[in-house]
Image (tube, rainbow, N blue to C red; front, side):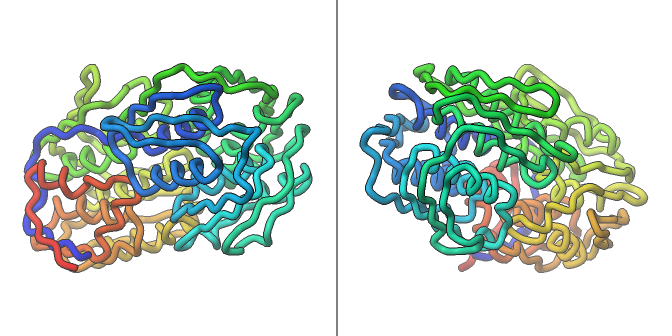
Length: 421
């Protein structure tokens, strides 16, 4: 689907969608608990649906409700003979549930799509094999899991993917005996692991952390009965950035200022850009502002890089985004895709080995490709707030991966567009 944007957002108020990161984690905990759980999660993206579907394939009963899900947990004494788990393009679904399936002792076949089969599984792969699990060769479709994960000492490089650490944290409480996860290298994207630990705590699992080592007790998940997926700072950032570089203020509601989500850092980054930002009890308002270029360390905010890059086009001077090399292994090579997006709209951007250098310049408009990547498609819509002409986004349906009602909210904020298949 192509979207042709005639004029960008004119300001207003919009509610943040439910956090995809929180929903993944709470669904998994609920499916492994000792009783049913009601999960409030008003927005169901493709990635969240993939996790729900895989958990159902492993034996959970997951019913959609008006406000989210009613989850009846997996009966570990009656596992399916063979579980077929369709992951879509969700890296979280695959990397979280591979060790969970192994800890349950389930025979499972995972079906990743898009670029996901080519994204790395090491060192999680080697650690699972070393602890009793048989896995297909990396890149296989389907990707098969056989055997049962054992307790013990695990070593994981902390600068590759936080999802490997989270996957083991979900799995090891299902295994009798205490386990330890030893981290090596620089701990990047720690906030995502903090969210995992918090979700586990809400389900009665207490994780220790000392000297770069997580201690995981074998034990039971205990349902709290009711849980809620908080608002998503990652997706709220698109509207906040559009306001900073646009012509009208935007308020996003449903956000927790004390959230563990690392992308709540968007507030401080926009302030550093020179934006006027106001915080209320559960909302953030950003006003159009005179922005200036700066350096942005993306080590702990990789998902914000695409939208920050297009925001930098409206800033005077040069902006350099660095420590973002992992973005080459996402749904697209995001460093390349973002530069292509900016140049297609008349801006100036160039790749560096681990980031992007953007020179502030008024965008003119044009036709840009989403590369099948939800964050590129949404960043293109944000860029339209700066453009003198129309913007056409090809592959605009990619937003469904994380934010299915993105274009509805775009219109709610005054954006005008037409769509064509």
